[in-house]
Every structure is written in C-alpha cells, then in structure tokens.
Length: 210
Image 1 (tube, rainbow, N blue to C red):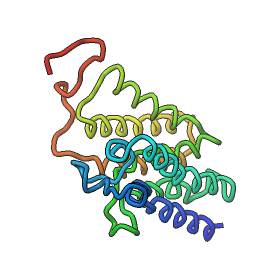
Image 2 (image 1 turned 180 degrees about the horizontal axis):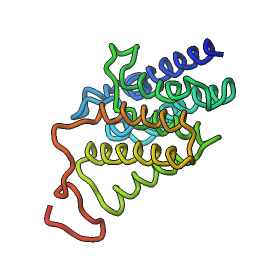
Image 3 (image 1 turned 30 degrees about the vertical axis):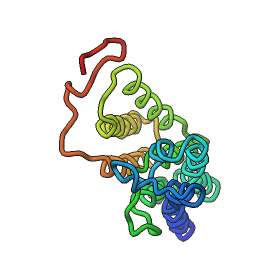
Image 4 (image 1 turned 180 degrees about the vertical axis):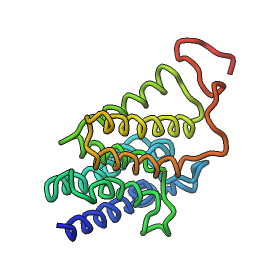
C-alpha cells in the first residue's frame, strides 16, 4: 500500500508541475503571462488579466483539475486515512509552486489548492467550506489589501481552523495535517516583508479616503 501512496504523491507533484496558465496563453495567443504580470506569477488571476476571460476560464478548469484528480484518485485507491495522504494533498500545490517543468519556478498555488479541496470534499467538505468562507469574508466584509496580505491572513486562519477542528475531534488527522501543509506552501509563495496591520483592513460598507 505504501508504494501506491508514494506513486500518488509523485502523480500529484507532476500534475501540479503542469503550468497550464503559462502554456495555454502562449500556445493560443502568443502571450507570456508571467512576463507581462507585475509579480511574474504564472497563475490564474494573471491569466484572466493578460489573456482574457475565455483563456482564463480554460486555465482555471485545468488548474483546478490538477488538484482534483490526484486527491480523488488517492481517496479511491487508498482512502483519506492513509499515512501519506497529507503529502498527497500537498503534492499538487508543491508541484505548482516548484514545478519540475519550469526550473522549479512556479505560481502561488491558490487555484490548485482549491482543486485539492474540491476533490477532498467528496469525503470531507469542511476545509473547502472554511477556505471559501474566509476568502469571501476578507473580500466582501472586512477587506484586506493588498491581495498578498489577504491571502496570508486567509490561509493562516484556514490552517488554524482545521487544526482546531482536529483537536475537537471533528476532523481526521490526515486531513488536518494535509490542510496545514497546503497552507505552508501558499504562505511561503505569498509571503511579504510586512505583516498585516489594521491599516490594511477596511469594512466594505464604509467608504474610506484611500
């Protein structure tokens, strides 16, 4: 069984290493999304900005699939209580952040993380609900700018929330540790020199002079 789990970890990493947001815009429109973007990130958000909605949707579907397919495969083959399941969860995000096919220089791993959680939702929906809820809260209620700080706050609380649920006996250890690993990858790729302060936050229903 451990051999199968190792194979699934490798499958997830290789799946994550396929940078569709870099390949599709270049093949279809001759656009290098990473080169045109300020943060040089070959990710979904930049694809929408630089290549348009059509290519953006195409890339989003494939980026989500990079996480969905390996996790669903793992659930079917070895179950979500397998010893290496946390690494299987994290592997697509690690592959996207440090891709084999792009000299280990990749994106911020947010879309592929959502893909992992969508696949996981077949057996455990809480992490997906929590991450969606946090992103919506910090985008629509208490808005945090810039996006990097919003992402860091969201994933810090995402990791903490899942570990709390594990401590309360509401979440399997493999799932909680997998979510922690995902969070560490995203936090590393989105880290900035400054921490989030109250100056970075504003209530959506109050106008400011920013």
